[in-house]
Image 1 (cartoon, rainbow, N blue to C red):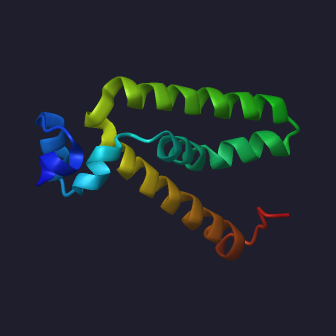
Image 2 (tube, rainbow, N blue to C red):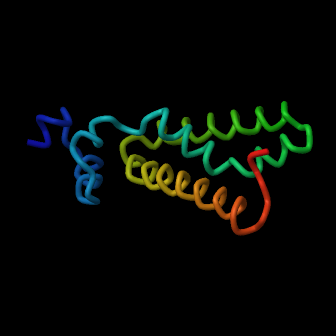
Length: 113
């Protein structure tokens, strides 16, 4: 059934499915959107700090360079990176949500002004 869903079956697909990934997710591969979103999430605070100090161009260039490197690395590694990139994506989203909430309500600062 997995071969029919994924379209191929090799050691990378088998490893990803062994880690609990669905056949549909293994078929999609390391997506550009997921990698870029994860990279942006993990870079949120230092890009925000650079922009707060009026380094908007450097902040944008640094974010684009970091995301381009991450996308290139994910595609170079290939299907072996799918499970790691999914973990990177979900942990990055949790990091931004948690630290933003802590900054707003616990540390008595307002990062959204």
